[in-house]
Image (cartoon, rainbow, N blue to C red; front, top):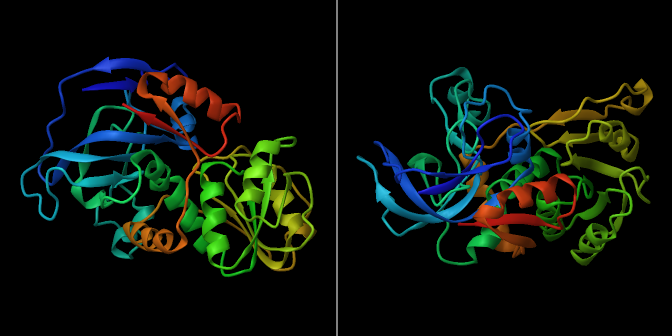
Length: 327
């Protein structure tokens, strides 16, 4: 197999060649056809997540076909197209797993962070954490759904049933969730970096009621706001935009420090909550929802050996929609 691997904190990814991995009991080997590039990959590369064991192969929005089965695998076959998401394993024994909150598992494994991911020609995945994808849709278009879509879905559900939804950071997750929210009959207000006309135009083309800079107050009070950008200063901005009783959902795994803010913008039973990982049930619900909503992802495709360029453009805010690598 060949891959782009991270060998040290903050380093550029480097090519890696090794024998194709062999799946263990309950695992499958997937020949990767597309892997999305997520902001969480940046957090891995930049060392903003703890306890990284190097070298590690990033990537957790994986689409591919099974080409080998480990012992005891049932229900999946060689040649089947599957998606491999961020959550790659849970213990099934801790308090959270037993309480049907596997996203909070005390002993999890994460694709592209604590186990090798999809910036590669092949990877090994736990069968229980693979989503059958069927044959509809292009591989590159499906890849962003495996994290931007799934985490976006969990954040939208956590935002509640309000009709006016603010989305701060209109990238991979934002442009997917805008379409889901519109299909649910909600009004979407999109917030981007100041001057990012391309992202604002994309938001409007997807049916947003308004698009503007993150520092602006929208023309209507929000029932809830979802923050996808890893920028802590957006929390008080969003609190000023939501109505009394509204909710601000922080959807990233990492965020810069939240600055102090006056109590009066939190008062009125406003809430600030976070989203952590996903559950397999989230995946089942999400893929049902997008089948009805007919989601279209906007992607820029890079060959695998240009993974550093894709990460750089994501870091600099120079992507519209999502980046996807093809081996």
